[in-house]
Image (cartoon, one colour):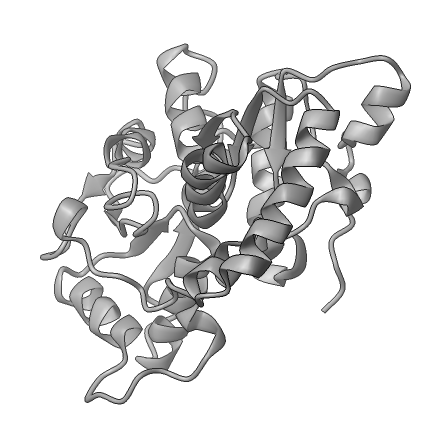
Length: 273
């Protein structure tokens, strides 16, 4: 799969600047968009990356990406028990971020969000880190995103799947739901949600290995909860949850009835971006 070169993330109307480009011009962006490995390499997650960029561009936030300078946060290495590799990756990233004098970061991935926000400070990396769902909520509160002029979600049954490192890991429960409330959709909760939410099965580097022995894969258990409440859309805020849930939907042969969309995609569609 080809990498999405962040310096070439384009749509017909704008181009995404890299930190190197802005630094060369003597400029400092308000915020760094940390794209993440999934958002860079995974074809499905690349669509989410583009929509986050569209939102940032739409509200005229000064931002940049690291482009080819961005590396893995070290999250998979740490969850898999390789602390040495994690610290090596983290220190390289901190050196890069500090070199650009980065103060504020928005991420499209809860794993990157959790690692940079909570684990980099122990290694000397201190930044204000927010998830893109929190930014979207803030922009809605400020009246900069109004969910009008685009696709209507009115009346559709939408359920939100809490990503572990966003919800239980960092207690970010309301921001993604606030982003959905503006749609005038029928929001429905699954049996296990918020602090009792069920993992999609990808966390802890589990996505990169075969499932543990058992009677049922976790993503199938989660999708069955979606089917039970007759939801038409699963709103996700994590590219890894997106993959696991989409695989489960296809396995249950429900992909024509149930769509899995990221909060950024829903927001971009509703605002016709």
